[in-house]
Length: 300
Image (cartoon, rainbow, N blue to C red; front, side, top):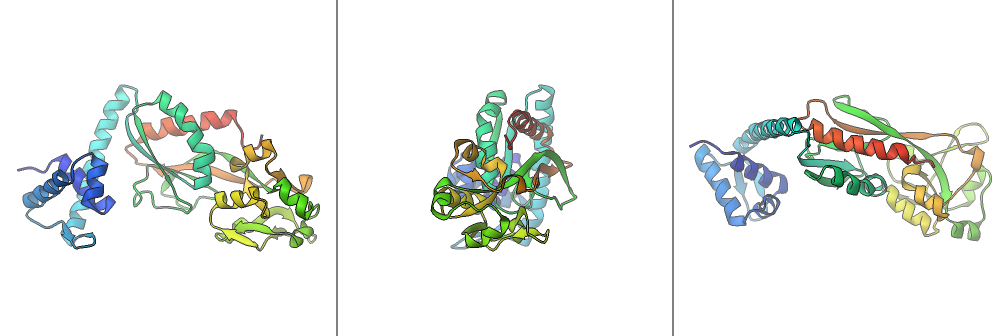
């Protein structure tokens, strides 16, 4: 008896989710049906793929070897389906998108409604990760990355750039005064990143011409957390325009230092593997992002 695609899907889902219950929910099946499918697959292969303990499921050596083949087969099935869909000129299927929380909330989420209206058969799965991820390990089709790229195995499509500015809330400035020179920052509460430390280089120059590097009074790994702290009046922050445009327009955050601010911009790229089988889904989503952002620059 031959192995079926449904059995491969069930096996991969159990591995990816870590449990039969979670896999059943993802696949839209009952727990018992998923368990039977997995047992049937092991019977066909006459081997144990997953070692069941009281706390979790672990891949056996044979299971790990078979998983690699299963993923290859499922990718080939996806590619075949994608090619058929491309012939009909309508992208279809799941697209897994990853971005840091601020970019997801302030840039991508507002674009979803328009994208879904145009491509209703593309199922979006949105994940937020603050650091750099392995696209294969996290089963991600396309990721949006801010800053310099290091992984040469990825295809990168430039989305644009976003300027960084020093900002504070009117309430903070009313209580503590408005600094007019970079040297005066030492007298204020500064909000910065816990990692990477390079994000604590602000677009200003010291009296000796060097770039201002701040030591945060409050630090966070999340730009969205720092934005919330600044809005609450807890300090001065330096953030990218893409996440503060509405705050600047409404006056909730006020840019500081005017012409003293250097024109420092972060590059934004959509990245994915060159040999992906999801080209049309990725292309239509990235095209949509680029099209909308071209009409709404971050620094307006």
